[in-house]
Length: 109
Image (cartoon, rainbow, N blue to C red; front, side, top):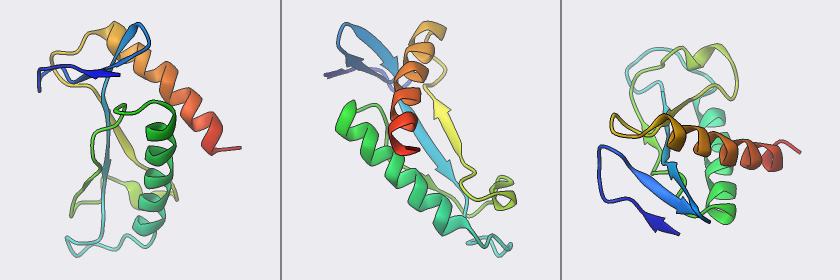
């Protein structure tokens, strides 16, 4: 696997394809608003990210944990997955979704 050079188009090479890197953005109750399930959401994100690293190293960037909720308090497991950045192509993002779907399939068994 090989990583792209640009922070504006973060990619990882998986086989012969370039995938846009993914990143979880998770909220917490650090801002003072109630968010009773944020630790559960974080645990699920870590589980997904660990499986992704096992199957497709480098697909995910490190998780970002914020003091906002992003409406993630409304359901267990709610999260934001950022797909690539402003310089990534649609094709790179679609490649990422193919691999993310395989990861989720393994985690949700």
